[in-house]
Amino acid sequence: MLPFVFQRIFTAIPTLIIVTIMVFSIQRLLPGDPALILAGEEQDPQVIEYIREKYHLNDPMPVQYFAWLGQVLRGNLGQSIRTNQPVTQLIFQKLPVTLELALLSILIAVLVSIPVGVISAVRKNSFIDYLGTLFALSGLSIPNFWLGIMLILLVSVRWNLLPASGFVPFAEEPLENIKRMIMPAFVLGTGLAAVLMRQMRSSMLEVLKQDYIRTAQAKGLIRYVVVLRHALRNALIPVITILGLQLGGLLSGAVLTEQVFTIPGFGKLVVDAVFNRDYAVVQGVVLFTATAYILINFLVDIAYALANPRISLSGDET
Image 1 (cartoon, helix red, strand yellow):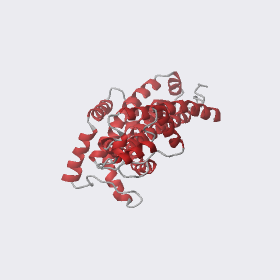
Image 2 (cartoon, rainbow, N blue to C red; image 1 turned 45 degrees about the horizontal axis):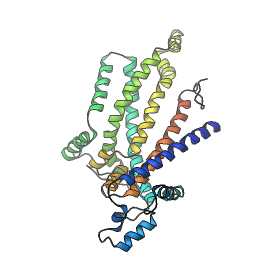
Image 3 (tube, rainbow, N blue to C red; image 1 turned 180 degrees about the horizontal axis):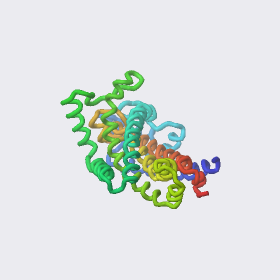
Image 4 (cartoon, helix red, strand yellow; image 1 turned 90 degrees about the horizontal axis):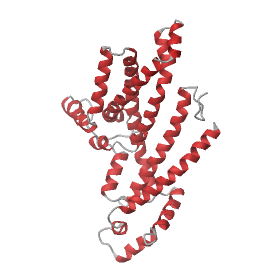
């Protein structure tokens, strides 16, 4: 276990270094002078020169990079020019909101996709299979923002069942929080469920063709025992991969969905930072997201071994 963990950590370090170089370089290539933006409307020459000295803007690019990287390694991601708040504080303010939305979306997707995918595979070319395929195509084809707007018009405006937008922290009013999060979670969850359902169906069909499945059936095991105990566990491996990647994508911010439902998560934070040329916030969010991706991929590798004991933590089959 420990050698595997250290191996993954050593693999992640070069990736993070490359990400920091890309984030820093791309930000510096954007048009506009950061010192003028930080100075505000008055743009006093003395203030501009002070800002250049403080943020090493007069230094060569490599010097600026290492100065910025040194601050990052100490946990200092800079300060927002719009709110004057530390970027780390802003990230941890928005993270619980987006994390809750992501987890609710994944919960909805898993509860829908895995049963539908398994049934579609077991009853291939049946009416249920065709219905599942239609659901998958609909989920992939319908844009999230359009589905969100339609839900607001029907569920909130016409039927008055749920609030149309806004956010209430779970700690303050749990029921109100669920009411406001269920529609955006459903919007994101349906698209993810469509992807997972097709992958689950394809993986189950492949596993059901294996020799050990036929052997289990020949021994007289009940069909649902063969499907749930022997086939499902192995078929979940590619689904776990997609779940890990999708969770990373959701954490980076479901921008359109958060905008439609006015949810103050990562998506809104990034959009506001880009429009306001808030370089520190953009850098901090991108760096945090990249780190989250690497961590999630590590957890996915652990999940492989839990889903299929034949896969060792070293990555070799036993």
